[in-house]
Structure formats: C-alpha cells, structure tokens
Picture 1 (cartoon, rainbow, N blue to C red):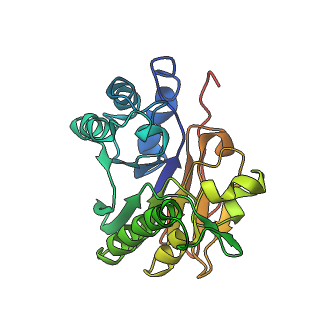
Picture 2: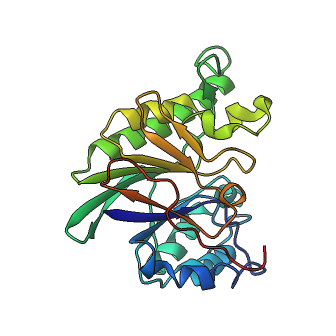
Length: 252
C-alpha cells in the first residue's frame, strides 16, 4: 500500500506561513509522500516561493508539486521553481519522478495544464490565430503529460496537474468558466497510460470526485474543496480509497 497526501491552491505568502505546518509535521505517520497540485503562491514571486518552501519544505516525506496559474502571475516561474528545488521540493513540468516507498515504485508525472473546455463545450483549433494559440497551448500541455506518463516504469502511477482533466470535479463552478478550469485533452493523456489516480486543483468551488472517460479516478484536492491541510489516498489496494485521513489546520 502507498499512501499519498495531496492538496492544492494553498496560496502561501508571508501571512499564511505557520498555518499548515502543524498538520504537515504529522505527515510521516499518515502518508508516504505529499503532492501539491499548483497555486503554491498568491502572485508567483520568489519571495512567496520562499514562504511556501518554509511551510512545505524540510518535511520527513518527499514533496512533489506542479505550478499553477497564480505561480505564473509575475512571469517569474523559473525563479519560483529554482527556490522550491533548492528547498528539496520536486517541481514537475512535463516530467516525471519515481519514489521508492517500502519496496514499491510510485511514479508521478506532472504538468500545470491549461484550459480549453470539455466535450460538447470546448474551444477548437480553428479560426483566428489567437484561438489557435489558445487551443495549441492546451494540446502542448496534454502532450507533455502523456509523454511523461508513458515514460515511467513503476508499480503505481499518478498524474498531477493544476487544471482539471474532467468536468465532474468542476461541478459547483459556473458552467461559463469550465473552459478556463480544465480541458478534455488532459483526461485523454491520463487515459493513455496505466494511471492509477489523477490529482488536480484550481476549481475552488468544484467537487472532489470524478473519473476520466477511461475510468481513472480523479480527485480535486484544492484546499477550498477538501477544507483541510491535505487528504490522504491509498494506492495498490483494490481501488483508490476515499479519504483515509485528513488533517485539519488551525487559522482558516
């Protein structure tokens, strides 16, 4: 069994430092790794990245993250990534990593992802150059995720994104903004490999549970959705369990 703690959209700045840490210190007793599904910061500055590193770094379990749209706001995503990497946090963008956990190999492939919408209500690669660029961006992120997923040899494979791969986990958000919260191409990429679990954030008013067309369980772990410091899921069991253990944090 592999236990995965996950959260997204923590939006750390100097005012948030200290709020998650007490719950995070309990992770070794509850989970084998922590995955963070983007929007690590509020405005994507190196200073905020250092706040996130102080809060989420130096834990007794590996921490793997992807960036979110907020982490791109200041156009300093490379500097943000460098700060996090220097703190021992693995940041994935179109890449994969493998963690050795009690004799099992946990593969994690990650990308931020992008919007575009879902079947029946999606943007198409047609018309103005601006629309082609928008859809092309979604397709590029999906392609790098697909390649990363297919590159991993492991016992259990997880897809980690910020944007949603399915519409089911967006239920609760206005339908008008679904196209800005995720895209079907990410779900198709997840289904291209033997993915056991897909995690994302971004949809603060969405729902926790969904499945890809191919049947892969999808979990929206945005902090406003799970309403605690992290949820824990287990792999290499008969199915992905419901939350095994959560961790409430003070101050929210």
